[in-house]
Each structure stands twice: as structure tokens, then as C-alpha cells.
Length: 286
Image (cartoon, rainbow, N blue to C red; front, side, top):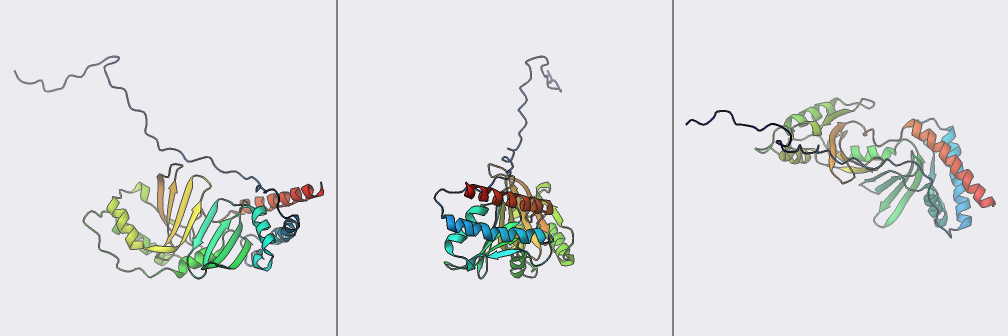
């Protein structure tokens, strides 16, 4: 007897295996919303008062300043006594974006809870050699350090046998970087949508090289932005709350848009900083 050429499949309720549930990636954590910095008890009242006066002067300069223009408002904290500097740190709090830029000195940059108000600390060995608070979309030092550490595109390592799409991606990035001019829109290559093998990622990383600037944005999940050794070329990775990559892109741009504060956010910071300083003065008057 010849075997039946079509397999028999049972029909009816209960005859089919249960469909597995959709396998969704975990979603990022909750988006952070603005909340004033928390103040420790027992702080130095005199230092805090001086810190409030200094920040009031910064606020007045922010109100006069045209967003994105030169000569951004800033405070030089090295001119202040250490207790006043500590009080300013406390009053500004820690925001969602932090960065480190290697070089001399190494720059440690932190956005405060007020978007567009940045702490910029220069460290040489164990010594703090510069300490600024600056109000601007993003500190210009990030782009300057990234560009200073880049090198002209070289031949790079030869692709291995398992490398598929990395060479074409590299050719596209090199052509775009060569034509890039300040003010151009970002050119984004979405690696998450390309059939990239592990060998492709290894080759791409080796060919692009490591840069001097690393940025972490924690506004919604985590976003890690790294400069490369190629001019105006950045690697941007978005992670969810369990540290799984959910989006990986390489951008040819001056600085990825996820880093600078937007003009609307800066305007909100002016209002919120004014309200925060007014609240502090009310507490002192009680």
C-alpha cells in the first residue's frame, strides 16, 4: 500500500496546539518628568544663600540670551568658595544626560535637572582645573573633542568571510561624511533594519574606530551615543529597561539630535529655575 501523499491533520476544537503568545520586546521604563532637586538637611545656610544669588544672576542672563547664539551664559565655579560650589551642585541637581570627553583635560559633563543647564568639569589627573555651569543647547566641547580625535578614513581591516553588508554600509557612511557640512540634516543608517551578522558588527566597529566622546541619555530607557574615529560619524544605541538593544543606528551629523536640549525645553527651564529660586527664598523667609 502506497503511503497517503498528504498528511492527515485533525480538525476541530482542541485538535490544534495552542498558539504561543506574541514575543514582544520589553518596553523601556517610565519617562522621567521634571522634579526639583532634593536638598539635604543641615546644609550651610550662608553658602546656600550665596549659591542662590549666583544662580539668580545666571537666570537673568538666560532670560536675556537668544537661544543658540554665541556667548552662552555661564558661571565660573572655580572663583567661588568650595561650600558655595557644593551648594550650587545641590540646587541644580542631576539631569538625564551625562558625557565624558577624553583629552587634556578630561571633561566630565552633566546636564542638571534644568534642561540646557550643564555642569562642565575639567579634570587633569586628580585635579579639577575648570568648573563651569553653562546654559546652552549642548556644550560645544563635545563636538570639538569628537572632531579633534578623528582621523581620515583609512583602508581599514579586510572583511572576513562572514562579513556581508558592513563594507557597503562603510562606503555609504564615508561618502556622506565627506560631503557633510555644518547645518546639514543627519544621515542615519538604521542597522536594526539591515541583515547584519555578528561579523558585520565586529568589522563595522573595527573600521569606524573608537572616538573620544561618550554620552548617556536616560530620558526614556537608555541611549548611548559614541563618537567614532571618522569625522562627524556617531554610533547611537537605544536600550530598554533590561539593557537589550532595541535600536542601533550610525549617524553622520555634527551631533545626534538626542543630545542637545530643545528650545522649548530651555524656555521651560528658565521658568522652572525661576520658580525654584522663588521657592527657596520663601523657605528662607519663614
